[in-house]
Image 1 (cartoon, rainbow, N blue to C red):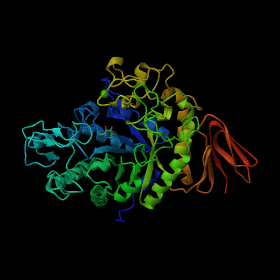
Image 2 (cartoon, rainbow, N blue to C red):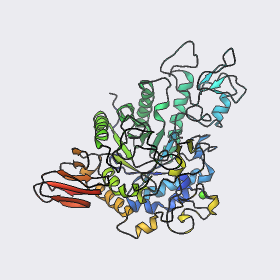
Image 3 (cartoon, helix red, strand yellow):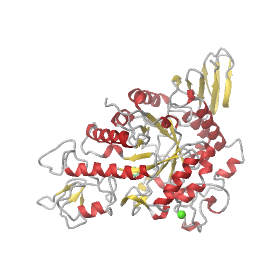
Length: 533
Ligand code: NOJ
Ligand code: CA
């Protein structure tokens, strides 16, 4: 394995918090969240105890995919503020003990990016992947007709308006001359461009990047060897030039991405066959009902208890053994692409157990904005900036405005309600930060206490050992040889035979009883105990 500089020390203690900038806090009343709005809410993040924020793309963009269609990597979109406002936010965050990561959309640009418009008008340009028109006017499968004077067609990476940057192909084929090797001029220019983009933002005080579709760079690369080679090269460059910065991949296969050079990778629903399953494997359809057919495997957090944490535990152990000391695996509560934890009837009742699990697991936990108060996946919203990916897959429901208080627009914005980026959750009992801060029994206070406990207890953090005692219901494990965690995410009570010599000291317990040799966990119960050894 190639040796990298060890990850910066701060990363082992990172508790990530993802901000979808459109929806977090609007400072100027135009209905869209912005940097100054985030800056005004840093107190909330510091109080909660998170220490590393990652922002979805906030660069100049036509916003057909919510900013994942970048048309200028070096300037922020005016709707969020200026580059100076971002730099100011980063400085203020630092005074709150919070680092900020940006989103690096490495695999594609917008079709409005000047690199692409130049390429679409210059047959000699190979920053993108171009196929000539066939003799019968045809184009290869998956390619999209050129919008410019250049004849032929280009390869998109996600939506048609997101042309793939050319990082080359792992396999060449003389019949398909657009398959360039990764050492060709276009791929080299694109790698240099990625370095220039990273250098620009790291120089402004940013602490690294979440990398979009990190596995997508080299085409026809089934085992990802060539894509990995590119990230290895970039990591060496980063180690030399910005040793305190980190790369966090949207890849979903830490076994591959971390050895390639990422400091950490998300354990996502769409990674390996069992990744992320513990939190929620089922995606929501436009009606907000869970799409059972999307993923036929049972989910650990299925409230009826038909799942098993065994799938997750096996996948986790495999990934963490492969990653070993070279990096970390990050477990998100949700993100802007899939449904929030609270996405169906009675899922709210599971949230404390979900957080008790996530925040005592040897991961770098990532909290999606609003999950700390149990914000709901809001069903049935219209498409907003490419949020609807199909009749059964609407991402808007996870992107609604943050609910701060019971003022107008829940404190998100002073704009008229019909001017908001997305409507608020219309539920009359929607949770808010203000109400939960005033209530020490709230989910928000619980999440805060869990983060504080984790921060104060190295055994519960990313580096402590984990011994799984029962990969069933209840899910039972011991951290650092000393802290017992019991989680029952289903609605029925369960018990588990476990002989504990002395009465364990309860740290955070709800509905878990220790009696003689038996642990009993009521429905949706959790318990964290100090075994004192
Ligand atoms: C993954 C991002 O998370 C998603 O929101 C986006 O639509 C695609 N990549 C394309 O960039
Ligand atoms: Ca605004």
